[in-house]
Image 1: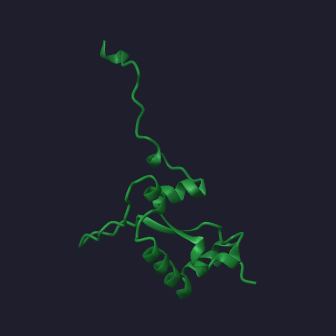
Image 2: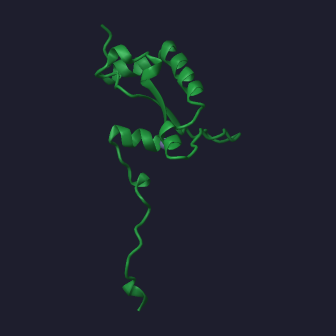
Image 3: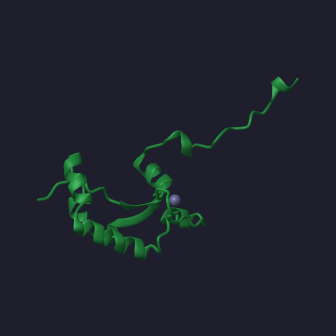
Length: 113
Ligand SMILES: [Zn+2]
């Protein structure tokens, strides 16, 4: 049975033609929108490539059931969901400073006095 436990195994999976094709099918199905943003009433789509600049990648195609634990679902379209980077990180339990609220307003601004 094919496993996707090591970084090498995952890398070769994500480089496979089968994955790249299925990924596109998932994006098409999801209308190239983050499905979690959509539930919140927002539209998050991939950025448009600006000539001369590196394209910013916004959308990820995520496995709802991680391939590490559910290798049989690696190439099942129903197991895929289009997510923006923010929602993907939240789902993966990764939080970066930049996705936290920028700054909480201080209730009292003592320094003004
Ligand atoms: Zn999102």
